[in-house]
Amino acid sequence: MKKIEAIIRSSKFEDVKEGLEEIGLKFFSFLEIKGHGREKEDDFTYRGVPYDSGFIPRQKLEIILRDEDVEKVVDVICENAKTGNIGDGKVIVTNVESFVRIRSGETSELAL
Image 1 (cartoon, rainbow, N blue to C red):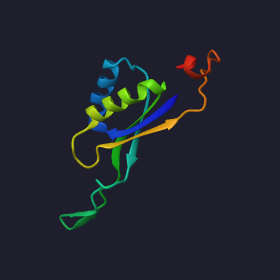
Image 2 (spheres, rainbow, N blue to C red):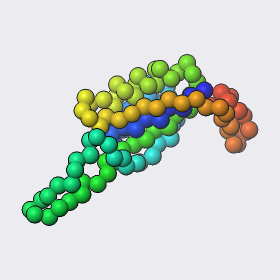
Image 3 (cartoon, rainbow, N blue to C red):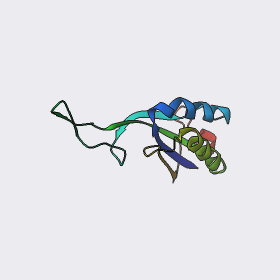
């Protein structure tokens, strides 16, 4: 099993969600997060007053899935989240050692 973590623009969240639903993936977790990266503008001055542009709002998706589904899901996320500009996001894929459904006690792929 694998875990996909995708950090995407908030404005692209609905597109990614619809793309995932089209391939049959209807469950994932997501969080509203803030980040700091190459896209962040430096502090700027407006009418003589310095402003901190702050952190950039993003959405983070977390998906646990079978190994054979990873490539398809990553492709859908990248396709739907891409604008071609700095700040489109990142996709991280990691191994999952175990997974347990709390209600039934099922483990591994049976719990998905």
